[in-house]
Length: 118
Image 1 (cartoon, rainbow, N blue to C red):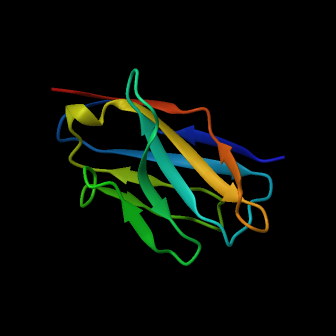
Image 2: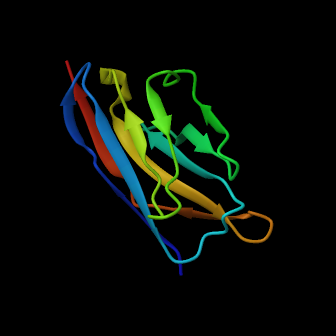
């Protein structure tokens, strides 16, 4: 069974940095992508960053050049380095992983709160 557990959330002042991490337990197909999403109150989850199996990354326009997603296969973790944080980055951040032979299965973490104050 696959479990994703986020850590590293918390409170920070605008301009500061936080590093989130997602620890994966269980088997995830290494050929599938992993992502970070976030959810603002009353809104749907939106993609923040994605990393494909070959290391190709994609970012939401609002975080590009500020956030960096990576994948540590040895530790089975998915870090998200967040720099130059803004108050509008305040949200619950979720880790997600695709798996399965066709990468059609989707697993989610429980989320971690990030609060950026002015």
